[in-house]
Amino acid sequence: MPVDLTGPLMASFRRAKKAYEKALAEGDYETARRKALECARILKQLAKHDPYGRSSYLAKARKWEDLAKGLEEGRIPKREVKVTSEGTDEDELRTYVMGLIARSNVKWGDIGGLEDVKRLLMETVVVSALQRPEAVQPWKGVLLFGPPGTGKTLLASAAAGSLNATFFSVKASNVLSKYFGESAKIISALYEVAREKAPSIVFVDEVDALTTRRSGETSEASRRMLSTFLAELDGFQDKGSDVLVLTLAATNTPWDLDEAVLSRFPRRIYVPLPDEKATKEIIKINTRGLDISRLDLDAIAEESVRRLYSGRDIKNLCQEAVWNMIREENRDLHKLAELPYEELKKRSLRTRPLEMRDFEEAFKKIKSPLTRRDVERYEKWAEEFGG
Ligand SMILES: Nc1ncnc2c1ncn2[C@@H]1O[C@H](COP(=O)(O)OP(=O)(O)O)[C@@H](O)[C@H]1O
Ligand SMILES: [Mg+2]
Image (cartoon, rainbow, N blue to C red):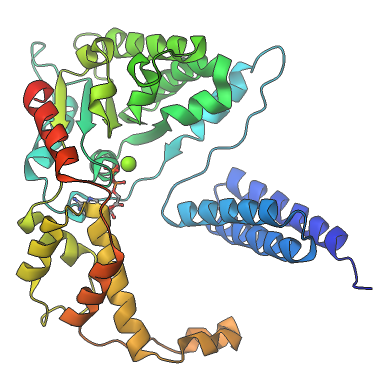
């Protein structure tokens, strides 16, 4: 009979999870990242030992891997907060809100193309920081709209990074699903903390999730959350006040937004698919450190634009191409998996200049979800409501 390892594995999982939480609380994100990976590893072993729980263990393992990846990229996960029957107390709400603070080390230079959008955001950010006459008021809320993967999140991160602002990153649907009845309180707590920690940028992703048009009927909870959000956008930032709290909202479906939301975002910026020039910049950003002198960038860019690639698609394209090159140059790579980590650290990957054939293969793998008609819909909305 096989030995049942579930018990000891669970125990080591609990230990790793505890260590992760401790590291997170102490702000030791490197340890937290390693512990998260350990949690994922143990869960994968559990999946092997328990065929019934397999898919659930694997799903959990993936979550831990995502957490670790997030930490590596500077996203600090929110801690779970329990909602008690008497409601969540204020400290817990604040703890949750503190967990929404993300570090941002994105620079304007990491964004290819989007010159106008960048300029506008830079102006907004700069004006709000400068001494200025009372009549000059910076925008309080800016809406970024456009197809998925075009750099909306990236732009918000760069704005925060350049200002060295406290960056709150909120996904409307997350707050709603986690808090439901209390989501309005979260919004109030969020803006309270944002004002305390100003300059702040509050990035509300998927803002369309809050509005009525999308689902037809919205719950009481999301209605209250929306009205609190709108009130915050209306209310604070008294004339002449130095406190900068800029709200950036993003949506892939601007046509779902209703009048109430639109009116709070007089500044609506279209973040379009990259053109050929922007595409070339994004390719350069995503092949840094490699020799690209043999590539016909014009041809690659032309093909990308023809295929309606977003920035994210181009990034994935580059990644595929780079891997094609790496695999070709390091045929026995997978065999090294037997070696201990310390041994691996001593070796280095073989590389060569990127070739067109690496990209030709990569193109086969990357498909844009968009059609011409989708793009036209964005353009039409931009023409009618953008500005
Ligand atoms: N204009 C761009 N310049 C450089 N990279 C981009 C650009 N647009 C998208 N990307 C890449 O695609 C990824 C996803 O972009 P993101 O900002 O999350 O898109 P959105 O928020 O619009 O859906 C980014 O992390 C980045 O790697
Ligand atoms: Mg995004």
